Length: 108
Length: 353
Image (cartoon, rainbow over all chains, first blue to last red; front, side, top):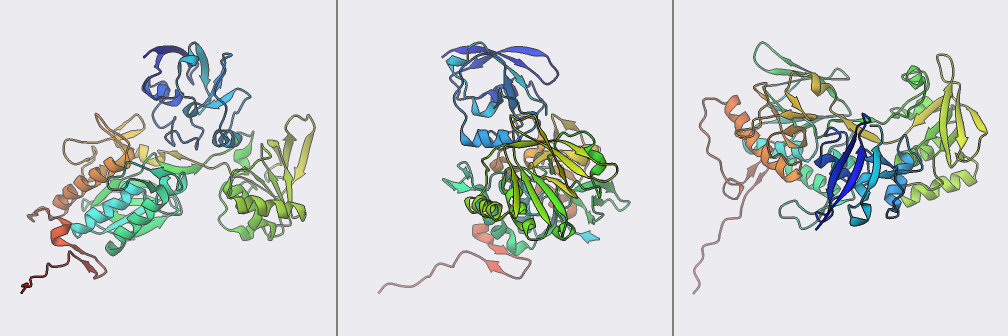
């Protein structure tokens, strides 16, 4: 097992560097909730089914991420404040390839 | 005025199951929900998703779970106030509670059970300058209540899901002009809705602008036009319309419940989990995803358990003088308020000769 470091800028602009476990079947949305970087009820509303966009984030580092599923793509097409680097945190599984990933939580 | 024994705020799985447990104790229930149909998130967000952790169901679709719960509680004749949000809670002099909805419907009960999940579902509003001033009768609506108001009007709908597709199809026959704007060429909806929109587009009955985004609204007090920009193009399309209907889904907000004097922590209501899930207001309980306590898990199955204990406590409050012994449904059966009775068939005693 190993942890990776991930930098997350919260909605107030504060940057947190957190240890993200890669052996617990977790995703970015769950990581943010585990570290309480966004208030409960404002992130992961649908529980991680790519159905609410409350975990939208902007990927600011150059990591190669898994491709978007049709569900994620469709949800982002209906979300607000979407940028080219927008992803749904719940669809990004924590893995060792994410070492050093940097991201920013999209506005609520 | 609607009167009942237990007034349940929220008609999701936890709220629905409360009706069953209350019914076993001969307590009547009435439910209020902001959504037009029962089931909460299960119906609104993920009716087609399978759930695997409902005890006794290896797999059940969220929508089926709601149907099953509705069937299970039918004999207990719950009342429903749907499509209305519970706005205020008042304690009356006789010790009961008065809950009034945003539409003014009044409900009175000695016990209030808040099973509000993540809150009431509100339409997600696009971030456009000055959109607020057109809300109401100014030409912008997030929910279509009466399609007739759009008869012979020019309507622009934005969104890419089922409701955007379905309303575009429906209004194509009523409005003088329907324009559908979506950020992608692809729509996420039932296949036959997508195909129907395609054929209406081919017939010239729906104007489709994709991939494109709404970037502004124009008008003094009432909406005059919507400014649309196609993705990757600089040119702005000014579309003269009478109505703009953004349909970007719903998101839950704790809403007015937050102002009821309840102790709130992390967007949830603090309850006494050592006993009965009562809040800091005696007679008001919070069960299911809306509550919080040490070790809380937001699972449907936990909501069912909380509802069960809460009903026992409510019974003691309503009937302080009665002694009650819990009876298994295998023993006592179920006697509905509708006169129906279900019970285990009696064993046949017959000699074998």
